Image (tube, rainbow, N blue to C red):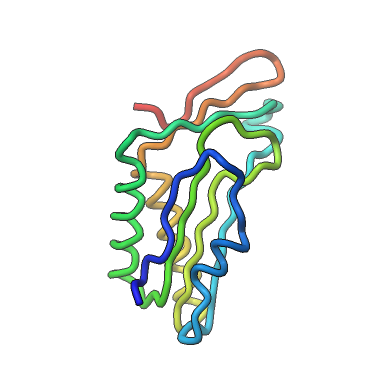
Length: 140
C-alpha cells in the first residue's frame, strides 16, 4: 500500500477524522496529527478572518513534499490536506498526519511534513485584521 495516502487542497471544511482514517495502519505504533487553525490574533493584532489562495501547481508540490518525507522517515502512512478560500477564526486551515512504527518517528515525520509544506508549497494567506488593515503572508 502506498505510503502517501491522502494529499488534497480543498475549498470545503477539513476533517481531522478523514485524515486520521487515511493513515490508520496496524504497522504503526504511533500516529501524530497536526491541525492548523485560524487564530484570533497575529502579532498582537485582532484577526477577523483570512483567505488562502493556491497556485495551480500546489497540489503536485504537496505530493512531492509528502513523498520526500516518506523516503526520509520510516513512515507507514502520511496524509496532508489544506484549505483554500475564506476562513473564519477557529476554522481548520491544514491537517497533516504521520503514522510510523514508533511515536518519536511519527512526531519527527509530522513536523517535517508540516514545516516543509509551509515553506515550499505555493499557498498564500491573506489576513484581514479587525482594524481594517490586511496583509499577505507567503506570497511571492
